[in-house]
Image 1: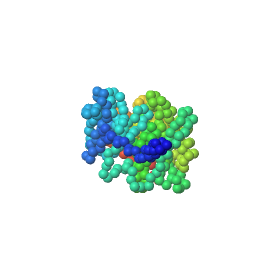
Image 2: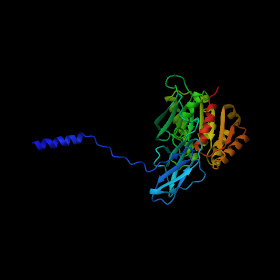
Image 3: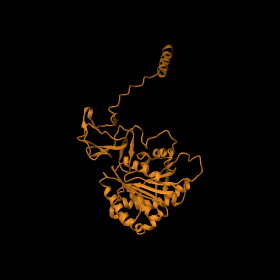
Image 4: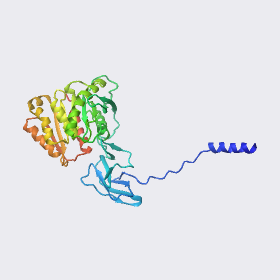
Amino acid sequence: MTTSWLASFLLVFALDAPVAAPKQAPPAYVSPEVHADRTVTFRIQAPRAAEVTLNGDWLDAKPKLDKGDKGIWSVTVGPLPPGLFIYSFNVDGVATPDVFNPDVKLRARSAGSIVVIPGDPPDESDARDVPHGTVEVNWHRSAVLGQMRQLWVYLPPGYEKDRRSYPVLYLLHGRNGTAADWTQAGLVNFIMDNLIAGKRAVPMIIVMPWLHALPYDVPSVESNDAFADYLLKDVMPLVERRYRVAKDRAHRALIGLSMGGAATLTIGLNHPELFSQLAAYSTGAPQAELEKRLAPALAHADKLNAQLRLLWLGCGKGDADHIVLDDWLAKLFTERGLKFTHRPTEGVHNWALWRLYFHETAPLLFRP
């Protein structure tokens, strides 16, 4: 009896006694590592790989990584300017995000990783100590496309407290993007918060739909045709039911980048009764297909000039795949007598440029 009691006591004591937490091994490596001089070291562990390269949305070439101890490959690049950049690795021909970096950039196909280079002082896309708006994710079933879709919606500071109607901007991402792009990589919510706080932009609602209306491999202009129906018949009615938006053309704008820039022009110029302000960044589409879809609108340039309050084109001069189309559009619009602003600038096909363009064009919207 005594032995049984003692054994039970020792068992209970053992169960109640604190257990030392196992020591966690330090991480095998750090990636990305941002240095004080704004150079960045990227690393990935791939002991059996024969070659690893770095893809970056700011890079023309793809630098090779060097293999070190424990199969850890690394390369240091830069210095980079302040801002947010997207990168990935290519390991023996297979693209992969940085597995040690939790900041992932989602795409329609594949994924990338995000690195942020801090600036001093902070730039317009940084979160500052100002009133902040909110970003809502709306799931809905599209009657036009017969599938579940996402809408990301930015609501300006104070939206919940007042009862007035707001102007609305429909903001489109590019090919291989998602509805999250303009928030996740474009940082549009922070840019708008800062512009509104500084009284440099009119408070507005921003609607960010998913542009890929058809499967990814379908040509972009065909997908944009289907997206036009989805935007006009599903998205806009939903937004006007669910949010306090002004329902007239003077208070509607459309902006897009790359594939979304082409969608902006084909939808906006062909529907001036719905949109009064348009901006296309780094427009991407086959020239012949784009010209065919713009022809009906450009046949009535005088009418467009009377209806449009803003038509804005911009592209980076270092964007070899898109600057030719941008220049062609500018020449076409000039020949047809269309009034517009053309802003070719330094830069390439990346979010660093598109954030700058948004910061420039957002204050132009909905001004009296």
